[in-house]
Image 1 (cartoon, rainbow, N blue to C red):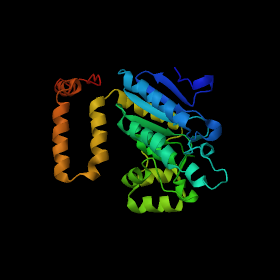
Image 2 (spheres, rainbow, N blue to C red):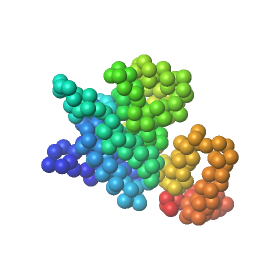
Image 3 (cartoon, rainbow, N blue to C red):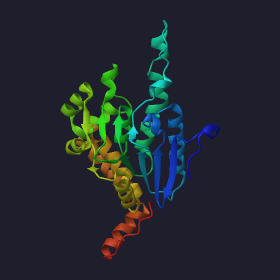
Image 4 (cartoon, helix red, strand yellow):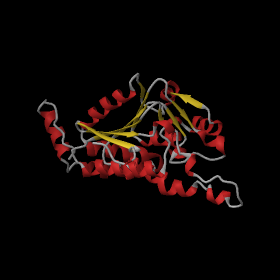
Length: 271
């Protein structure tokens, strides 16, 4: 079932269900799936569906057409000449009200997320791809930190996510130059997991694999890994202990150990 846009317009985000996997597709192909405020709202609505349906165990995010996402749709900014142009064209409000909530929601959604980067991921589009747990790109896809070309800095979490993936030296050069990064180089640098001829099919296969695994443990692993660089080793050791203890009260922990001892495949429920 697809999300529906207001006023009967073509949905900016498509929602489909394939077994235990939700497939969300950014759907403004003529605009290279650049984000409008409406697209953000529809993405949040789709994520609400994922949160509410406990039978969904993984999520795939991709784009329609030849692009994944070209970042913000600049046509929503007011660049008309006038003394107040800097106030009208201020990117801060849309970042605060739309892009930052989207990044926060993707990073904290209750299921593992796989991004199928089917084409260019530019600006905030690259940040959105990195906000997903695992990214698989098509051979012709590329990643562009386009912000320096228009006098801005990476946003939507880009300055936090990119150094984590590729290291400070590479992140610095990519962000300052705005040079295009190929899918193959993105894999070599560690920005993405893999390159596949059919990125969407590969992402769905990965999501199906994750959907059969212990969901709560996977999401807890994501949180520990993403936050590790902000903690000391002692703090991280304590966090690992506390999370392990909490997971010890889940169905999937008991099932996993029991299945191991009985030498049979585990039947995880995500509980």
